[in-house]
Image 1 (tube, helix red, strand yellow):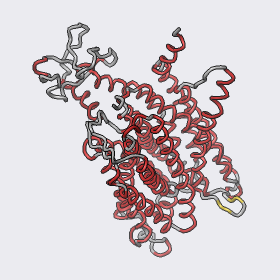
Image 2: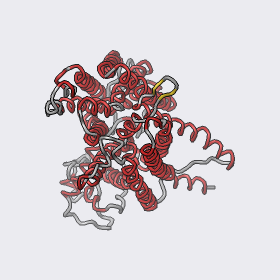
Image 3: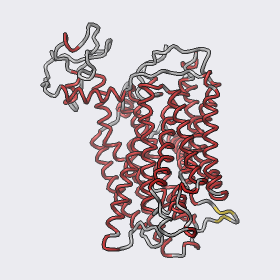
Image 4: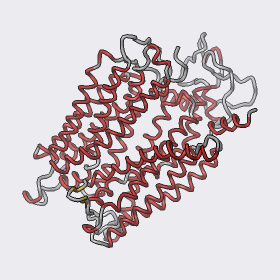
Length: 566
């Protein structure tokens, strides 16, 4: 028998599987194909991202502000889409068809993006071949471009929403589902594949674009995505294909709706108040926190509100205590979740970093390092941080202290936010130096500290955030816990766009040159980064307040109880 509560980790909104395992399907033979297809999707989609700023400025005559806004919105949509697809997968399609449709849509989007490099009228003509009026970007051209980017976001969202869970479900075969180390090994190799794919995209694919041109550079991601589609469908007959189920997100919405519909109910501390519970669960009343939500689970008339077998007659007017408590747990972690927003805003500043690197000396001997590939150092820094923390710091500290040492998740989150603040200060300082000296004579190695600090901040905060959500949310909400970081990054891109537009509008008031000028030497990107540093400092204080108000974590309370027990 499967242990209760494992499935929600694998799929957004999963409640119960209810499906019999097909012992002739699934197993290890399917994992290379699933992981391989997922890795190829990431090579393809991440491969077109770093150089997109250079492509839009050079070929579409777009200003840096417009490009940055478009990139922020594109990134936001890309991070939101897995949430939408997960709900669709849970409620309608199932994981297999979600990945299949997503892969195909993403391939179509990459083909359209490649088409902008070969169709003459898909983008403005070169400036020396026409008048200035004809060289401007026209609405149909912009719509065609946005359609390509939109399809890439929609398609990749379908793949990313279900690949990890779909692969894990292949291990629900025979005794494999009882071996936790098998599943742990799968997760480890999945994330190794993810990191490797991103590194290949940021180096090899970007190098091809810089040296072989945009036609070949955008054709390669499209071919990688075609190979991903073929690889995934080639094992279709071998897969275990879980069906659609009740969505946890829908259940949370039902609590809000039921609370509003039952707003006329009066809350009472009397013990004779009847609350609706799942069949077989203990009759524990809901907590006193956020009490207005308790109205969603009050049974006003047992003969009218529930059926003979104890099921709610209308799930949109009567919910269970478990559903109410799940929503309360989610609302309680939101303040700390929001404290990571500014750090994500700092991570989103990729467009300006590419322009910085492009204006500096990037030669190492006879090799010129691609400007867009400097993001690789952030990914490498994440890996280095994880290795040093997990394999060096913790064992060494435990040996010195004579007992197991662990740094709390809130401490690591706060340290990551602080490192993000330092990275913005360093970025502003380097940009100020770059403006003061001839950029061509300044080595791009000066950029490494800011990339490394950003990677260290991301590794410290984001990993700790994931642990925090899995620790504090009920086991039934582990799937939502897995998606919290993605939602945060999506919202952060919208916040970054708002900050960018506000600074651009204010700084160019009165006919002044905007701080975010198309000419990086005329603008004041150092001032822009200083504002982000100020926001990061304020965010550090905000996190400390939220952390103190939250109180001790569940894991810390359990650890304290174990240490004090005889």
